[in-house]
Length: 466
Image 1 (spheres, rainbow, N blue to C red):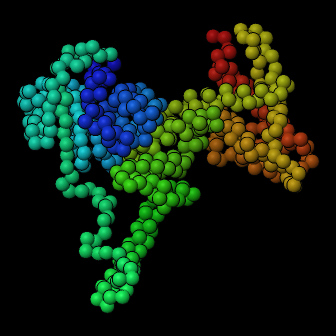
Image 2 (cartoon, rainbow, N blue to C red):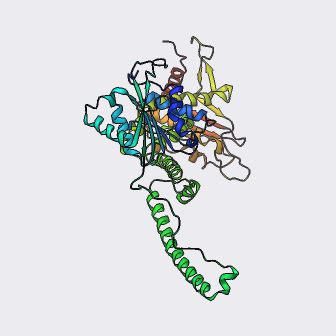
Image 3 (cartoon, rainbow, N blue to C red):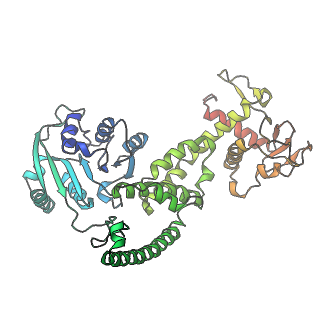
């Protein structure tokens, strides 16, 4: 266990958030050393589980999975290297007692404007023996307060007798990083068409002047608007799928609060961009139907992560390094599909120590795998089974070492068979036969592949004796 990991007890979290209680529903909140999510859990419980404005950073991979499982936006894996673009109003932190000064200085650096509440080892402020501690002492003196909380972790779930202080800092935005505001020109007024204005010659002159000025402003704003649209469409084009409308995404994430709007846009945009990037890198060839649901959850969690070279390489590595497990699960999934539809698809094997001691027959009958033939000349596959067809061939490619992208698709070959033709036809791994009632027959061409598939499937089910 991480020696610096001390989950924050509830009574301490309550003290941390008490000055900001009325702001918690709209504030953009970051816990940069989130652990298992104690601080974020406390806040979300008080808001009926709402988590859309809660962000986390966590270094420990197991704790990161815990946070993602709770639907928190995990935006990075090491706060001290974070350089993302999210905007925050409030940072609540319980950093490692061993180097809390570094973490608090980092929080001060990334916060544009807003508040920080940080638990620190008391010794960090009492003994400013390093340049970083001295810098922190000056910031606290100019921008904050210190509250003694004593040995606050002496009765916590994980105990320590460290003397703790609670540091609160407030930061004003001296040079706005992003200026979303528009209040209109202070000397401009909208044209007033009241009766008094129209009947007064002087007022009418002012009115026409105001109208013409507004007209010029509208034209200028329109040009800027079209230019901005073209710019955002151009630069987002390589990151998003064509069906994802960037302008629609912008409009859907607008909010009166500019920080909320900006963070919502970033989260949605990055999630779509991650999905598109992984698609372009052809990672889907390693992902079968059985793991697609889990992967969709993974992509959603990954969408909050920064789009960096380091993170991209890490994601690809995770997918490739887990390929064996992914494909083993896929083999079992295909085995179950082959054996569940028809009793003739399996044969009993004597001597195995299980009540389910059978294997897939060399010929497999798959009812309902073909589409409706009423208005067709050629057979087609059932639309709802398209992922299962892909799974079958991905598994066979894995077992034979062939490239899934370079084989002739069974789906396409079925589409070339005329309705009523019941002859066997050749595909990469099977001889197949189509029937009008929607049933597809597959027969393994290679007995060695058939045997390997059964062995791997039964290994995955732990059916084989040691």
